[in-house]
Image 1 (spheres, rainbow over the protein chains, first blue to last red):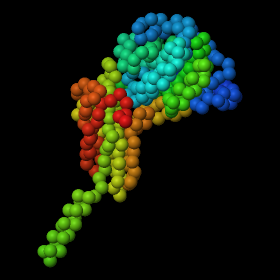
Image 2 (image 1 turned 180 degrees about the horizontal axis):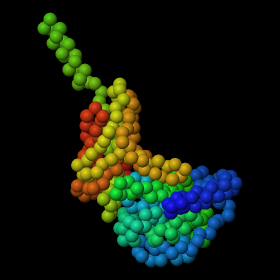
Image 3 (image 1 turned 60 degrees about the vertical axis):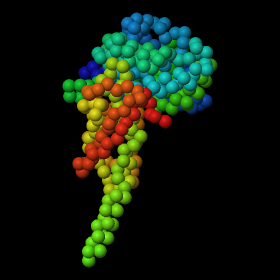
Image 4 (image 1 turned 120 degrees about the vertical axis):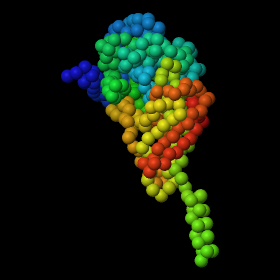
Length: 200
Length: 142
């Protein structure tokens, strides 16, 4: 089993377990229109990653605020920019909330070989305040991804390559626990409504 | 006889002038993000003719490498499929949009910024080429 297959397999198992869990628990969260909300928040593993300023993403980095994680990569011409612009729109929709209740947006790179902190920093500056990139070594990215049930895979295209990756948005509460996800396709007004409900 | 011929030629010319043609409309190019040598373009193809047309390629004056792709979300995973050809049935409209069909453009000939324009061309299997002007914008123009 090569590494990519292993990542997919791990993520698939994780997604299956999560899926079964959501299927059992999800019905109690009927008040949410698009979010899958877990009754029992899930902890994330401590990972050794860095942000787009080269600062360590230490345990506790995801505490104190609501966070939305999206897994993607900068050499992605369509779905990643589209989702990031949608998230920029989401932040605009949620501007009426207290600053502490507004979500921070994190782009976790599934292509850390090309997504250096500098590349991510320059790229995300286009989306304005509230966006932070995460990169690091492959194994640590894979560990964080697997803990959230995120699947991704490198797809070779001649001398170049692209990445397939989960299109979902992952929500962490101010304790840094994984509490909900939004599956694609994303309708940001519905996501904003669910987010307000979730974070109140 | 001459009159009949003239009328026939006239009708043929009138038909040629009024015959519906395949159109590309509402074209826009995503503003290239900082540091990236690629972006995507979107438009609508309308085929009001009475026969299917097949798009076999695309090009632009702003990028050297221009290909048709489709983003698909399968089991929650987004993947990009290269489209070697795309059929548009008679009377049909096909929309290229973020998260779906798109024109992927890389190897820039010149740098584009929001508010600028560039040419986009598509090539049909019958050899015809259609051209339009696309606005460079962060999001689809309203």
